[in-house]
Image 1 (cartoon, rainbow, N blue to C red):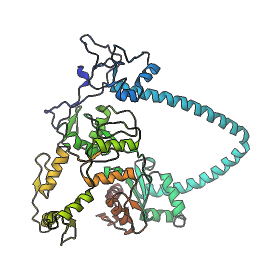
Image 2: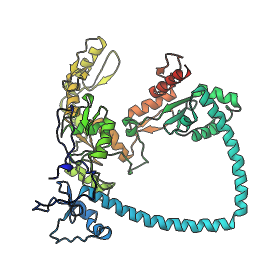
Image 3: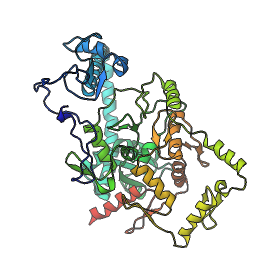
Image 4: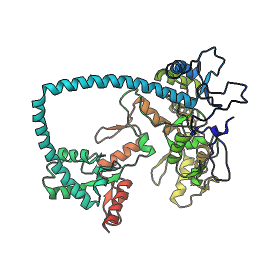
Length: 498
């Protein structure tokens, strides 16, 4: 086997290397092919002659589904036949390149046609509307001058009060928050923020002084941070819809995840990975899940062909969402309805305390049974026992929490599968919240405005806006904020004023 195709290592210390999967070959593709000792063509790529275990049959399975034979005949200077004695497989990298080239060819043809059609329309319109265009240009220039006047006033306040440069204001990494609005409107560009002020607050910003007062009192500027729970809160359209969910693929198997954290947990089924201690790979040490997951996708994962109905547990390509859901239900374990299970247990165990919910008398928090409640009550008298994880040094308040952590984070056991796409989750609650992306259900409704949400914690954060709850207070000027990110950025304004 060519050693250059097997050079990926994931370890928790530089001295403990463990080989885990294929790495993309970044060498010059014009190098000489060496097949001197090859006797069997079953693992030899037909298009680049690379010897690898990661191959796709041309005339069956994925190759047949993607018509690889037709695409090879159409785009490459070789011919392949099903009865051919030459290799009848291609490597993943060649297959991906071929599919991408085919898509590019189709795109070029469509783009050329669309451009020519549009050019004819433009030329026709130009001949018939020169006079009208002149009038429109004059009107647009007047409107633009009025808009620039408003933008310049707001820019002046932002640069002086928040100590920002023009480059900062135009940088896409900033988010403008209007706390005057009940829904705490946010805007990712200065222009869209200005349009909001002119539309919703035009009577409050009549002159430069009122603009300055409004900005100081009601405006916050934060850096846009996309966290995993924000990704999980993406709201789809109503009904069964195809949602663009981020996918992070395992380099060992067909599993894919919408969360980098769950991907890293899953990797422990293949190798020992502990982010807290640092993971060494390709001469770099990674200590956060996102950067490590991105590295895996870029260097060690051959992404499957683009498809909308791929099982995230085994890579099965379905024709539509219904066939995919049927596949997951038949081929992968899906739990029975938990509500029915609990109901049955309660009916059969009327006196069993294990299945009777209990409420903490100190804080009114509800637990699944009185035993869990009694463990929780120890936290009120300061006698909570600490349970330490011997693999990452994290501590937990109960033995059950520690066991759950070890099962998920160090053994990679994700037992709860989405019945729609096959993605795996560590808990039933996380799985159910994700499943609502596919079903469109939003069971948590705000009693103040009627907006509905998929997850209860999302609703709780929303209700805080109605109640004007500001948990995060600046220790310098006592100004309060709804989000920690807003407070963190506000603190930087004090540093800039020094």
